[in-house]
Length: 181
Image (cartoon, rainbow, N blue to C red; front, side):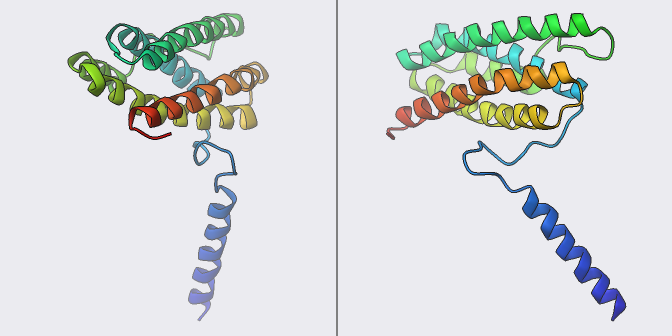
């Protein structure tokens, strides 16, 4: 009997914890797993590299004017953010490192995109931009709310509105390409 009661309490407590982590209205996704400031810097800088490189490919290969414009915006905005991140890391000194190249997932996506043409390219690129920015919003929200380093936390808070705007733009273009609104 005690064992059953203990198990019921654990299940109930687990449900409360899970409920506390449910996404809030207007959020892009469920909260990201909390990462350290150093992990945030590595992930955010790696994402910037990917957005810049993939954006350059899309600016050349996309057929949709909306996709080309979005891609150029990604190159511009993420280049600026990358420069700011590097300055922050250089100012802070040890403990924080920026990514020096795209991760394997983004390199594979780059290879895939280079093989696509026309509307297939546009749809594939935008599908990944929606998902990538959904994840970025969650990452930046988590850092802005829970970061320990005040400068890194401020960086996340400063860039969060732009990341949210990118996410919305990506959704709108992806829907348009699918024949949606």
